[in-house]
Length: 322
Image (cartoon, rainbow, N blue to C red):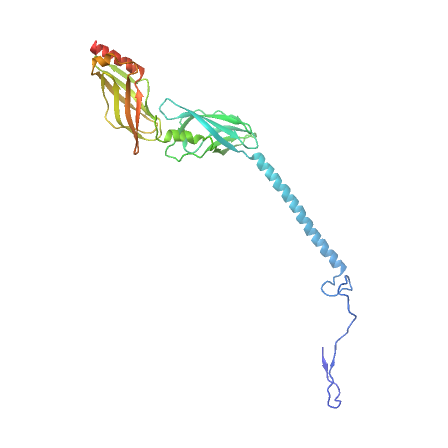
């Protein structure tokens, strides 16, 4: 707006305000060309804006649907590919070759979505003895317990106790991969065999039969027998007392050191000490008592004399006392 100078009329200066062109007031609620304010948008511009928003909304909707389809497809594929195994009770038969190996029967259930074939077992805490035949493949249908027989399994007592079993499986397409089979806490599993082999307890050190050597003399009998440590831990035999009524025996120097899964040859020489007792000794009247030490722990053990040794003792009594 401007201020225009007026005529000098009696000393009064009349200022006239130029307000421009004042038109009729519009309806603020109107829509269309008669509208006023920010909402006064031409119809063509509004149509273009609606089309842009509709395109964005349609793109988001289609994208969401496609994403849901892809996610479902991936989920279905993952479910079909999922393989779950649980290992259950285990039984084992120790080998008699002094290697500490055993044939282990392990129960496994397939809780996955497809049948598989179990073709191998390789789990921490164990080794496979050299020269062991490969595991026979076992079909594992979904939901069924199967027994997997693994020969030549040796506990590694320097390792930590196992918490599961690594199972090599093969699917229907021939693809192989390793799956961890968790242990069933209610039944135990491969850890039971590890504990049996590696924890120090009774019965792990035993004399084997028959003797490896028997030397017969007129007044003495020398018998060499293997003493086997079934466990994977090193032990020592700190005390050794052969006992047979009427006889006495000399023993090797003590202690006898036994590494894990190894045997020592123990030589005992028997002589007659009392003819009356020796001539009346019963067939099961002989045994060997000994003490096994592992670390700071000691455990008394006792093994009966084997049949061939008892027969030779009776013969010795006959030669000396007859």
